[in-house]
Image (tube, rainbow, N blue to C red):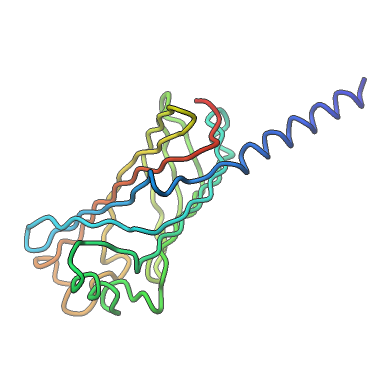
Length: 187
């Protein structure tokens, strides 16, 4: 009987691990966008390339592992000259720092379908703690995670040199995301 119980427990563990390993970001249905302000005027942009590794069970959020990588050179503002400027050392310095990363450290449930994800955001060699409220919805076998947060660009040395003046470019940058995932267990 002990062997049977042990075998069943092992099988359940591996099935859960396999289900979490099959979780995948659906990039074509996902988006990372941001809004900054230049001289008081909103400037909207997106990142075209990013990846996520997710191991998340809504019934055991404390065991979640979430990691994201954003290709900073994939920034899109709709103006090629501005995008080229953002690659330079005063902004993203994409040759030296090609990626921004986020690594979760804790996930806490707040309400049904709502979670708080804490972690470390690293951009341009600087790392800061971040807490992000995330709402989950499920439909057609996919899970959509939606959230928003504000970063201080100068905390990450984005806009060095003459661009440190926050009267020209505001320090606050709002980041919004919609990540569509396959393979997340039911809420």
